Each structure stands twice: as structure tokens, then as C-alpha cells.
Image (cartoon, rainbow over all chains, first blue to last red; front, side, top):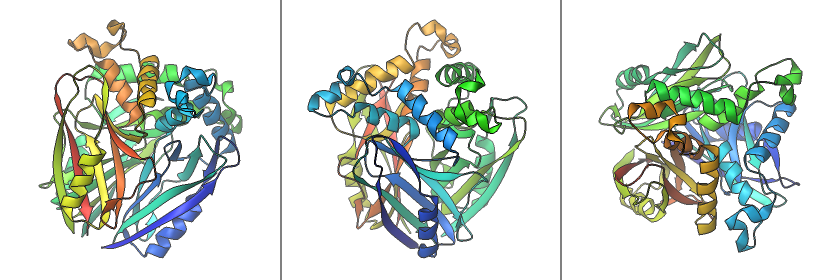
Length: 139
Length: 139
Length: 139
């Protein structure tokens, strides 16, 4: 069994935003030399997501608007978590809708993707450096 | 390490619908001859889901009604994504609620399931053939 | 390849509640003697979740309030599933928001976690014993 473990560092300049990390994960798959296996990609922070969807700016904006409707940031006093001095309770909720991790098959040394699948980091409490874990196992 | 990679083709005749794919995944687990390992099942399209829940018609109808409430299809002009000429922005949102992939343990050559776990394909922008990836690794 | 398969039994005394199972999963990782691999943790019941977030009581309360808003328990007659004699349709919906499974990397014999990641069992139809599956593969 071969394996590779790497962290990606990501800093989103605003409270919320999305970053396409597909190319970085692709590079790590090549580096791993795994031909056949699984690639786990997960946020290491609990106010961020890793998910797979379309690299289309309008859609990313739709996610932003929709998540803010499902789990509004303000008023921050509506959440018990914010009594700890945080103002990011909504970020913990949004992250559950979008998910923590994706598992992607590796076949013939490549991410085994459908035509439009792209890996995104979703940030819901940004303005600081955070990590994404990439773990690859296989042969 | 043994591995198996297969695609299932699914065509849902309406815009939205659910298909139980448990038997097809079961057959692939047998074919793989893996006794102990992991089975990844994921939608390869970004307007569809793979999820595990109950094979009960009433519940599937409840999911349909609920998802349409959380992320309504109409008016299609409410979504920026639809300015690209698409009308399926809601499908990209619904798919995030239901999830892209499931990972199931394989033990003693079988899907290691609780009593009611069934694997479903959830289609939110159908009327065309789409693919599900099944990737099995183990020994 | 090494592997380990274990079930955790959990009984939440109320209809809904959360249980931190991180220590139990940690112990199983040690027991497995896997240094490098993947750890799947999933609910085996379809009205429960396994998810990763913060061990903070206020936040868990926020999840409870939020999920009840997204998928209310009452009136139970609003769900077709409940015509089968069940009253737990909302639990099947809530579980989809929070997720069925998490996959965690194992590195140097430990769960490869960010600073605040904790594994939770989320129960949405409790008052009976249920199982969580832990499957570890690697070397």
C-alpha cells in the first residue's frame, strides 16, 4: 500500500468565500504515484467545508445567498454558541449543509471524476489561515 | 490490495426522482471478491446525489417536498447560475443537502449495513443518462 | 493491509440528542495498530448521524433548534412516511442535513484531526439502543 498525507493552507480574505482546490489535489495524486485507490479531502476546521460541485461563479454566489437564508449570520444573539464570545455559530451550521469531506476514487493515476466535478473549499469564518487535509491510499 | 471500478448508468425519466441501487452495488461487491474493505459510491454529476436511507415510498415523497421547500426550482430567475442558460441551479443546491457520496464498509464479503440501510441515487435534473461510480478497495 | 471492524452501541434517552464518541473511536484506532490509513465511522440507523464538529454545549443546542426549524417534528401528519405508523419522518430528514458518515485519515497511528474536530453521534429518534460502525483499513 502506498500513501500520501499533505496539508493545504488556505486563507480566504473575507468572512465567507470559496476556493477551487482541484489542481492542488490533482498534483498530490500525481505525487503519490497511486494508480488505484481513494483520496480523502477534508476541512480540518469546523467552520469550513470541502465539497464537489461546479466551477461557475453564479452558482457559488447562489450558495452564498442560500446558506445565509438557511442559517443567517445575524442577529448573532440568536445562537447560544455565540455566548462563548464567538460570532461564528452560523458558520458551524453552514458547514454541515455543505459537508466536511469528500472521498474521490483514483483510477489510472487520476481523480476519477465526472465531466464537471471540481473540488471546492468553502469558508464560512475566514480572514485567517486554515488547513485542508489530503490523504491518499492505494497502490 | 484488490480493487474494482465500475460505472452504473441511470436515467430518471422526470426532472427529479430516486432510484434504489443497492442490489447493483451488492453485485459489484461480490464481483470484486473483496472480503474486507471500503466501497465508495458517488454521483459523477453535480446535480445528483448518492445517499443511504429507507426504501419507503412515503419517505421519498417527503424528501421531494422538503427539498423543494429548502431550495425551490421556481422562479428560476432567483438564481444567478440560471443566467448561464441553465434552469437547474436548485438541483445543485438540493444535491448538497442529500450529499454526493457514501462510503460503506465491506465485511465478510458483504456491505456491512444496519437493518434498513439502502443506497439511493437522487436525481434533481434528470431526463438524461447519468453515471454513478462504484470504487471498491480491500483484500 | 490491516483492518478492524467494531460496533459501538449508543442509547440516547430522549428523542433527540448528541453523544461525543471521539474517545471510543480513538481507542479503536490504537487497537487496530494501523499507522497510516482511513477510518470510516457511520451510523447504522437511518434516523441518526455521525458528524464532526465542536464539543461545545451551546452549539449542540443551536443544532437542535436549527434542525427543528428546517425539518419540524410536528405536526407529524405533514409527512407521508408517518402514515406507515411511524412518527419519525423528520428524523430521516434531519439526518440528511447532518450526514451519515465521516471518513478520517489515520497518520502516525492517530486520527489526523484539526484542533477542534470531535466526532459526534447525532440521534433524532432515540430512546433505544442503536449502533455505529467503525471500520479501519491501512497499514
